[in-house]
Image 1 (tube, rainbow, N blue to C red):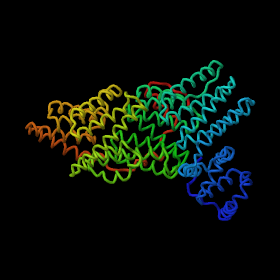
Image 2 (image 1 turned 90 degrees about the vertical axis):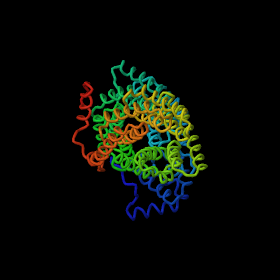
Image 3 (image 1 turned 135 degrees about the vertical axis):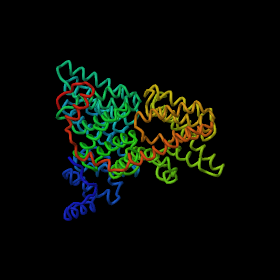
Image 4 (image 1 turned 135 degrees about the horizontal axis):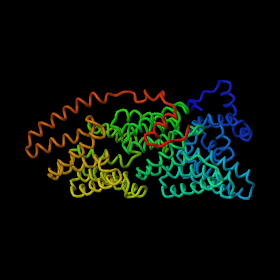
Length: 568
């Protein structure tokens, strides 16, 4: 079902009737609850519009009321807006509902299977809403209660329900960075899959394998993530919910991006964007999910201008649906902030970015503060900004190590950020140590010729060239970075500019003017090529219609892996 517009414009007579009910809310409260769910929701939405959040919160904190409102599926986006407003207002409606559901499940533990089945279905809808809204801890509590009900009956129906519950639980644990618990959840799902298999039954594994791919991707286990995305793609069959298909395509595309299989990634993510827009509409959070992953693809293929535009579109959707202090909005801000930072890096215009993004992103703020400090003419202000950046980078590093561990690309990036900062602080030995650590982690995870490795190699080259006078080492590193960049992205790769300028400075320093002249020409050719190659176009132009069916996309991917998939 396509998403409705967020603007709420009922018929005038109907609107008048709703307003009359709201005006008499205190006297009509009990009667309101007996109305059909769509009308009942419209009354509550009018309360929201009038800013009567305490009254709205007292209604939504009652499980029976909220469970009924959740049945108004065509109002879901408006419900997200109301819900977020309550959370911002200090009404802890998410935790109240999760606690109420958990209590209900404990009360019905001795009831018959039909009662438990009904409660499980309510829990799936409630937990799904909380998960979609970004309240992962509360959603986890709901799904754990559902799972507990599933374990009370050792019957086939409850095994199916347990698998479904594990998939949902794995998703929220991934979202909350509880990867160890996520791995346990996957293993539990497999035990129920095995039980079903022994009784001649099969549950579709696409969603489960897709969530496992997301977990492994977050932990930087890219080879394993890629393997499981293939398994997930093999499970895409006719009749699967579109949401599952879209999510599997998204995860498979990201796995292909980090394996630098860009053609496959492009086909998968473009089809995911098309499916999400066609099925859910252009204002739906699921469409914004696909746009974020499309932006990720564009950024990684060095199409930076278009990635910024796509990230902005995704952020606009999330702000219109959720608003407020929501994790999904924050995530979209982070992606847009980083792509904007990359886009603006050559210009050095960072002041406006500080005002725009600092409330959300400590690690990003640290990068911006460092750039401003470098250009600052006041020594005292420079030192203060660099120290602030240092504290933020250290904090970000500790958070990354806690969430992902030492052996992770995100952790390596924070080491690299510290290396650049120490270089700005003229702590060159510490800078060298951080850059080498970043390179070692990235090489072990991604291989010798990866884009991320090239970035860190280039940063170390810059340190040797500009500050430590290790010109021979710097030259080798620059040439290595250039070779990787050309191999992955071609002669017009944006990152080549910094390596070329570094080599020009290096050869000037050692008096090799023939090489200086050579790389001036190389840089000029690069500028001309860049102007031709990366003219800004609408990145969504070619995904509004899909030339291929989902079956063709899946089969094309599997054939490229020499894998025969099921018939869609």
